[in-house]
Image (cartoon, rainbow, N blue to C red):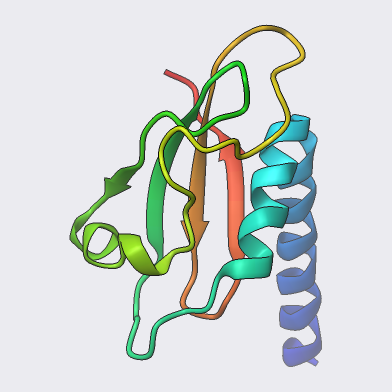
Amino acid sequence: DSAANNSSEKSTATTAAASRETLFDTNQVAEVRSYFKKRWQPPRGLSQPLQYSLPVGVDGALEQILPLGTAARDYVDRAGIPHIGQPFVSPSRNGQNVKIRAVFKPNGQVQTFPETD
């Protein structure tokens, strides 16, 4: 019986994380997630998530790639991140730059969310 309780707790936590992930989404955050979900193939032997801070300009072009940690730096060319200056997502509706955190997990999942300074 405790195993059944445990799995329902786990699915509730997963659902909460998923709704939190979409709750604060802007179009750009959702577009970045969709972009990477199609491209992310975890390298063999990757054991930890790779995290990047991705500032995106008003025009939707990637302004910088900021790897967070050594593994992220080592695998930056494997994450499928577009080149700096390349149009990446739709232009900002509110005329502001956005900074997006992208988390690439070894199991193939991708999470994205807005970063606040």
